[in-house]
Length: 252
Image 1: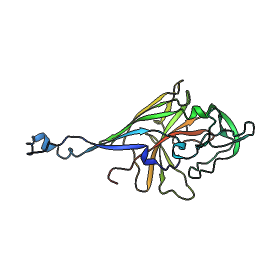
Image 2: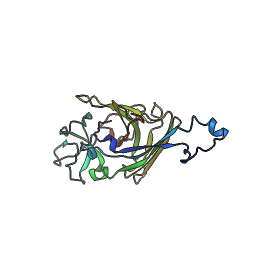
Image 3: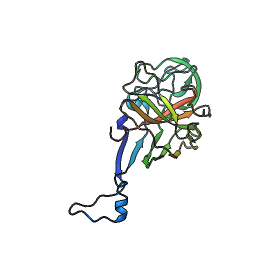
Image 4: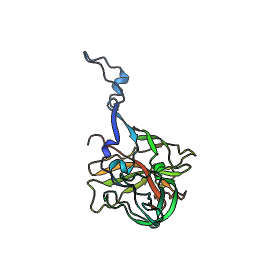
């Protein structure tokens, strides 16, 4: 989806032992079942508490929604941390605009396209929190969202980008959460903008590594359509709303 800077601050991971060890002192006698299970005593369960964020939370410009600095000008700009007019209507651009998150000065202008039917304040009202666990090769993501686009069609993505980033930025590799055909990553907000995304996944999610950063991101589809294994055209139809960087894999 896009590149981020503070990826390690938005998600925390803890390793929880499957079985507790004996208290200090003389070793406790082991039963036959304990001896047989010795190989599983040291198995671990990965647990993450996830808080989804906006691009502006990392001092970047929003990538896929735009506003008119001068009403009636026909030109739209990317909002950033300095944008203060929360009543500004949001638009798509008339032409596709590539993600350029590291170019913080690349905020416009572009020709104005269709109105998106929401304001900047409504966009930034969205929240998302939840958990992710991985145990025995099976993952479970459980996230609740509020104040999304009412009745909005969304998809969940597992994306990757190289770190340190290339110059120029070459973009991200975007995978639909779950099945590779995109049949398991769709969800719809209710009339209040609330939604819950709870899905199991096998194998577990690939986390960040030494040269790759992994993320989860949700994209709103302003045309009400989804595009299977592809996100759809960013900025004009598909708009990354919230994301959360994933921590490094255990042991790195």
